[in-house]
Structures are given as structure tokens and as C-alpha cells.
Image 1 (cartoon, helix red, strand yellow):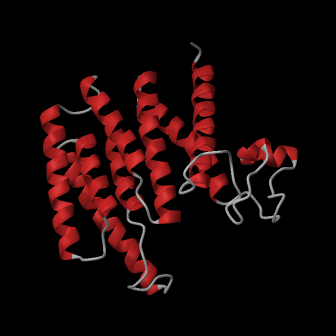
Image 2 (image 1 turned 30 degrees about the vertical axis):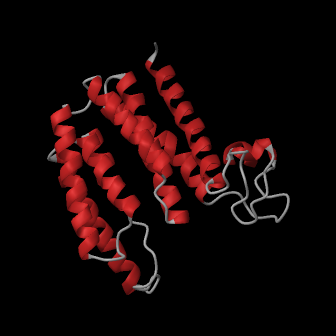
Image 3 (image 1 turned 180 degrees about the vertical axis):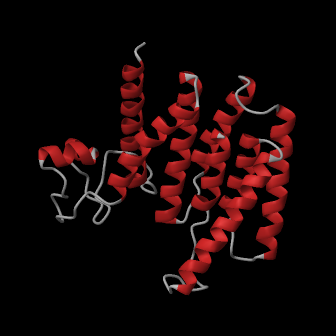
Length: 236
């Protein structure tokens, strides 16, 4: 297949996945997924508004109920997801492995969005990452079973101890995410990525405290900072 066609198809796949992530995030906590919704009032949006790009081109980029613009997070995700897929394609010579890793990054991105907006790390997304990890190990894409088990165990124990020491700073979802990342990356890569994530999250938390955007009593979304190093280690 022509290289330009592959790039176009991968970008298109990423764009569609980005729309799906936005729809999932819009409906998180509602018990069902029934289309795109306004982030301000929760109103269900017209079909064209499921995509920021299509909504803008057709004049449906505002909520018909409250007039809220549909950009913001939706725009970021819809642009970032195809860029992530193209990035994976650039560093991964195999198209199939690139799509596989693109799917993992998409799940990570969805998880980060949910944690930032709801302070939750959904088990359903973690289960998807774990399922893909098992598939990748079985297919020889990821490290061995032994490495995966050691990675999951070391990350799980390390973050459980950290959660006990820093009471209230970490949630059960963060511990589960750290464990799944250990399985995905294996040992010692998973533990090293976790260390970078802890440092990155600590720096971000300190910056928010110093700029008074957060107080010590406010909840802090830790998952995005654990995900960034894990995504880098997954690709490199």
C-alpha cells in the first residue's frame, strides 16, 4: 500500500478514535453512552456535533440548549489523537504494531481525560489496557510473562507503600494504574517509568500549590503524570 495512503488512513483512524474518546468522556458517570453531550449543561448534541471539526464546518459548534462552545477539551482530544497515531507510525516500522500501540495510547489519553475531569481512574479502561498488554505479551510485542509479572508486582507494591505513607495523596485507581503499567512495560522499565511519573506529578502538584491554583486539601489528578512516562517507554 502507498505510504501516503497509510499515513492518511492512520490519521483518519486516530481522528475517529478521538471522537470516540470525547463521546465516552461526555457520558462518563451517566450509566450509558448515548451520543455527544455539552460539557456545561449535559444536553445531548446533534450528530454533526460529535466531531468538533464537522461541527465547525456545518455551524454546529455550539450547544443548542445553552450556547456553550463545543471546543476546549473536545478540540484538544480530536487533534491530539491523530497526532499520537502518526507519531507511533513514525517510530514503529510495523503498521500492525503501530496500530496496537496507538490503541494503548488512546486508552491512556481517555483515562487521563476522565481523571482530569472526574478524579476517577475507570476500571473499564484499566481492563482494556491490561487486556491489550496480555495480547501484546502473547504476540511477542511486549516483554516476557516473567518481566510483566515482576513489573506489575514491583509497581503495585511500591505504589501501595507510597499510598500508605502519603495518606490521601493517592487513590486506589492510581495504585491499579501503576500496577497495570508495570505489567505493560515489564521490569525494570515499568518501575523506572513509575519513578519518572512520581517526579513529574510532584513537580506539577508543587507548581499548582505555589501558584495557588490548588490547596493541600484539593484533589489532584495524578494519572496523567503517570501516563506520560509510560507512553514514552512504550514507544522507546
